[in-house]
Image (cartoon, rainbow, N blue to C red; front, top):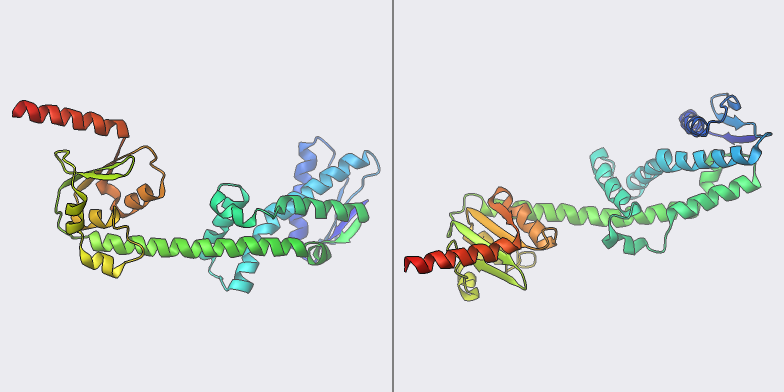
Length: 290
């Protein structure tokens, strides 16, 4: 007999559902489950004991990972960092999950020495080796303490990233406001990002760097001296073109994403090979006119 005692009725019900699900998917009978006093989940494992025990442990792991982990993250956010707004919590949770799922390598380096999944499975395996009956809340309080410290580290890193993203969005909005209603100095700009950054006018004549520098609105650099890129962003904002034809190999690079976030519908992505083709065609057309 394996038995887990819960203080909260909701936790007992949630775990019971996970256990039923895993037993059903394993084509094993669910008649061996007993749900007593609304707080205890029991399972008789006399026959085929190891198989049932493994299913019990896997269901317990999934219950913690899917039903309790986010709850603990939210509690850390509220109690330690005073993030009580649900929407803010959700945005930070999305960053946490992106790290756990391996899609944020830039942030994962800060927790490279942590392995939440491995440590959780080890804690579960240990408690099941030592006990066939135990309190879930005692397990969390004592066996999960090191893991809670690891979860707190994920929260800390994700909060820092969330703050940076908020600052970035405010910065982008400020630049959009600067751009709004500004008269265009040139209607069309061809921006080539290939072995450097090159500006071309609508006739595909390259704009010299000295000319770009003269076009820059000094108020822009004065108000945002750190954040505004004087090579690319400042000239584009100062020129305020109606349309920007952007040619680049990597459309996901940070500079391109920033340009897209600021200029939105003004930006037109074009494969880099098209730039050289269009420039050549325009040069031929110009020569023929001459």
